Length: 137
Image (cartoon, rainbow, N blue to C red; front, top):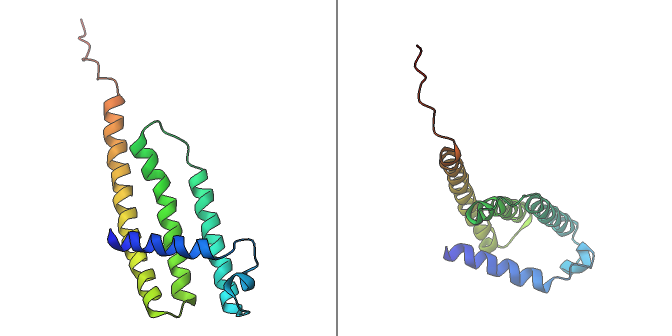
C-alpha cells in the first residue's frame, strides 16, 4: 500500500509541475524525440483511462461502482508504467514502474474476482425462489 501511495504521490507531483497545454518537447524541457514519444504515449494512456472510467454506468451499489471505476484506473497506471520502462532512464523510476505494474495487476485480478463473486451472490439473492413441483392428479 505504501508503494502505491508513493507512486500516486510522485505522479501527482509530476503532473502538477508539467504544463499540460505545452507541446511534448516544451513540457519536458528539451527536444529529445524519445521524450516526445513518451509524452504522447503517457497522454494516450491517460485518455484511454478517462474514456474507460467515463463509460461506466452507475449500478446503484457503491462497492461495485468503486471496483468498476478502479479497473480502468489501474490499467491506466500499468500502461503509463510500461511507457516508463520503454523510455525512462532513471533506475529508481524504472523500479517504481515495475512495482506499479506488479501491484496493479495483482489488484486488478483481486477486483475481477470480487466482481465475479459479487455478481454470483447478487444474482442468487435476486432470483425468485423456485416453485414447488406440481403434483399431477
